[in-house]
Image (tube, rainbow, N blue to C red; front, side, top):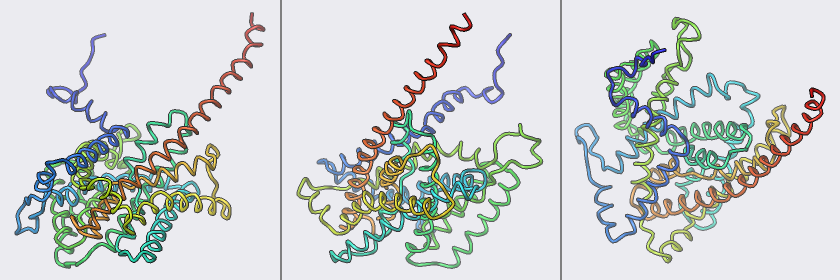
Length: 432
């Protein structure tokens, strides 16, 4: 039978290769690896003899001042490119609430409560440490965030035999964590509010919503509207990444009833997520990490000075201890005193390992640090050192713990397979 070339490949010479690369970039391990490479490259450059060049590049201004877009490259990465990451997060959030695990209240109750505990306890520890040490309280929200890309990447590397329920728990927790972070940024880190641009942003957002609700996919219509909503939100004083989330929320998750039955294809949210996730993983998040993680440590003395700052201590303790205690304790309390129950496939030690893993708070933590203290300030530099240190400690501890659990599940699976083989021996002899 002759082979038939799929219609989407006709006349598109480079499409198969681009599609293959995009599929690779959708893998969680690849996104996490690119993020790590970008952060390491920034650290190496910022602490090299050419560190001034890194600073000049990050602080170079681009964009029209008349539109309030005369921003540094670092700001473009944080306010512009990161909006793509939050757009994908908005798509994922809505999909989970409409058609995913968050749709079922009983199933979602524990990870949602765990996410709240994982935000409250780190914030509380940060506040207590800085009250005792005389540090500023502005950064209370920095250790509350979990980095989805990094956390899922670490889990993907070591989870060959871990229960699938563990990934579902982590994904749900991280999605709710992102939603809380978005609310925190919008409410607590909006310094000055300009009403007219904010009202103006409603117009392109509303038109975008109407078009996507009608299943319009034309990029030449949607992208200018999305950019206008983003630019007006930025001009209003609200952090522009909030526009990315709202645009993601506007996209419908379910297929249209007029689409023609179950074979009509995925909903528009899944389609957009499929298209934009590679851009987020390969460009938006790594570029942001490159310009956000480039802190000049100043050798061992500089590292010691940074990590003894109450701000840094609060962040490290919040990420490593606060996340672990908050998530584990809240999960136990909800499962103990309500009708919600932990998935049968999970043990409590798995929950502890996942709670430690949630202490990887890279992308959003760095963003909140910049909003709290301003880019380039001494506190911001200490925030970067603390976030990197806390996230690294959490990643190592979680990897060790979950690796041990992975071995346990692998051994149990091998024993189960051997038992099944032994149970099958009499049947073989009977048949012979």
